[in-house]
Length: 254
Image 1 (cartoon, rainbow, N blue to C red):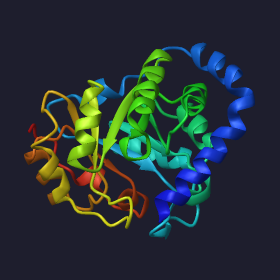
Image 2: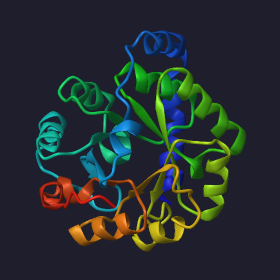
Image 3: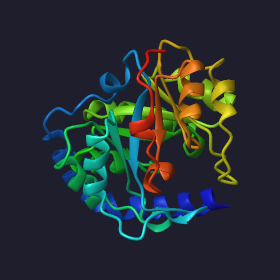
Image 4: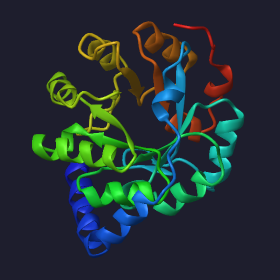
């Protein structure tokens, strides 16, 4: 399965970072206050986190000429509320250098999108300029999930806790998060089902910032998740392939 291979590689990456963990933590703590992703998304209209993403394990290369800075600047001009930068290197062709470059090029909050399993990755994220980080419930056990969440908050990162099932929603809500990402993509098959966001709207309290992720390809999808009570969407593949969703979307309040 894709996920097993990704997690194994993530653990190898984290292990290689351990010798510089203290340095990264010190650098993270020295960073100026971040830009609030929560504040950027918690408005009356459906917000968009636009993703800089070069490759997908299931769909292959999404662009022939990847320039994350130019991509992020285009998203900002088109009205994105925040930017997500994919940094996983082996399966998504991401890099922390992309995150750092985008951070210096736009004025929007930046979410580091990766498979985080060790605190050193959080230090790394903040040190390279991330304002927020994704924690995927599926790949982290209970005690470690809580530790990662508290560590992230302690170094100035906001957290999107990502879920893929009702059971994961229960685990996520124990953390009392401010933001929950509902991923419509099955992590075993990488297939998407937008209706998963509808199902999870019954589970995740509307008092939290609810983000629908993956499988959003049309304005009708935006209207649908907005009707289900979501505050924001995260869109990667469609925008990377040239979709005009950012400029086509309506701005009517939910």
